[in-house]
Image (tube, rainbow, N blue to C red; front, side, top):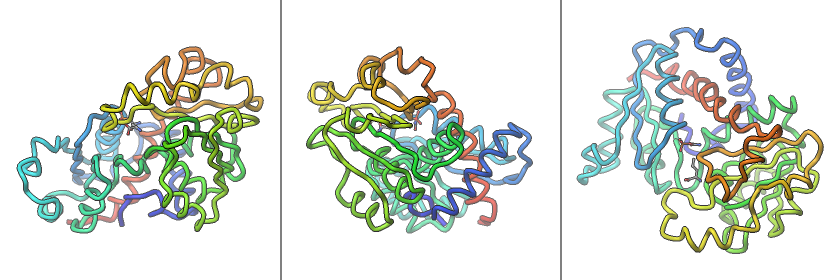
Length: 302
Ligand code: CP
Ligand code: NVA
């Protein structure tokens, strides 16, 4: 059982994870020791604050242990194959979490590992993030089905997971992206197959109008740095600011997976304002990853 894509879970399983995350949030660190003496290898090809800290704190709170493995410090960085790394780690640990540039790397790890593999962000998806996002939406509104969500900005990894999760959970999602930066066609096709109601538009105002949730992300994802200047230009009309927020429904919330580039994709007043659910969303990374680790590693034996 792996979590490489959010579609590795059914809608029903996502709801179970969200229910458990709510319970874990209420009980804080009184979570029991369900992962006692279990180890999680966490491989990072890119920097991380929230993902790394939530994985490590969650493993500790659940009685287990996380190993931080920077990919350049592993023999992987000197040419040991992904397959051999996956097979060997499977003899030492009960699960592998991996943040990678190329989605194929986490797929290959999952294919060769004998223990669960959790995608901690790839160029294609960020399933751990979307679980925290769904938890935050449900905390704010009490339901997910039919919630009107606007994604404003880059059709990137987090957007892709939002699209797939929308299809699984019945969100009413409109994605507003500059031409050329739309989400991957195969993600939209998969969402269609799952019965999703996803619209892709170019006009951010159209997406924001009447939205109950506005979500954005950086214009320059890790790996896109060479295009930074170009992107900052193209994405300027997609800033989440007070003008855009004047179009949303009463009681709407603003979300951002972080890290934010204040003054670019989101302004300070919106990020720090009363509609911001961003810090709750960030905290929910911890509760949701605990529920994921319990579920995926709880039954895992080496
Ligand atoms: N949102 C998120 O994954 O943040 P980090 O890059 O800090 O892990
Ligand atoms: N889209 C961003 C998300 C960071 C959590 C990136 O890939 O850099």
